[in-house]
Amino acid sequence: MISRRALRRGKSRVMVGLMGVAVLVAILPLFLILASLVIEGASSLSISFFVNRPAPVGETGGGVAHAILGTLMIVGVASAVGIPLGVAAGIYCSEYRGTRLAWVTRFVADVLNGTPSIVVGLLAWTWVVATQKHFSALAGSIALAFLMVPMVMRTTEELVRLVPDSLREAALALGYPRWRTTLVVVLRTALPGIVTGSLLAVARVAGETAPLLFTALGSEYFSFDMDRPMAALPLVVYKYATGPYPEWHKLAWTASLVLILVVLVLNVAARLATRQRFDRA
Image (cartoon, rainbow, N blue to C red; front, top):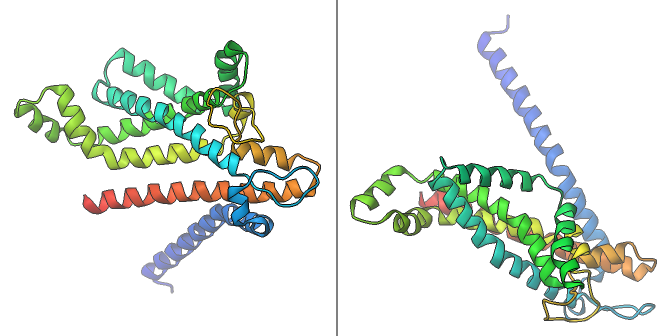
């Protein structure tokens, strides 16, 4: 007869094994994507790829330095707009959670989180591009900021709620007004988690292509003018992957590899920030 203890151990091992298999199946697509990108794109990875513009059609070599610069500028402006708005909205919805405005803001953020990015790009085209009558990197930044705000807001709201009420009460007892308590005590306590959420939001929008197709459009040249079309890594990947030239296909694979590495670095930075936060706690 098998003892009840041995039976429980057997069931436990079976379930742990099934969970391990489920974890492997879940991470397998990521490893397959990384392996494909490394195999196809590593051959064209070189210093010239990061410092040169694309070569003329029919010539080998070239790079995507203009697209890297464009991505940094577009995502940077979007972050400068979207992160402060998202943090401010998240703080309000957490500290004044019972108000009608907080309920409406939370509902709108949830709707925006589920909205396809191409719809956001179409809205940015209608409100900015069609009004200005030309494509621009600024319109692309606005579209990406629309995507960032609800993500940062919901993350900030949940993290601010985790701050103990005793800290608020202590600050209020010392004579701090409520606004100063929120900014100096509550926000400072939740700051590591907010930084983590912001990094994840940046990683999320850095690879968006659909909004930029309707707004930034793309360019073959270096540009520092946010009011004009500008290249970006997702746009370069889309253009080269759908082009008829084998050299373009190689550059598309390499640009995809660089883009996924950027996203991985941002995600790792977010995880490290989270770990440091819990270590301090």
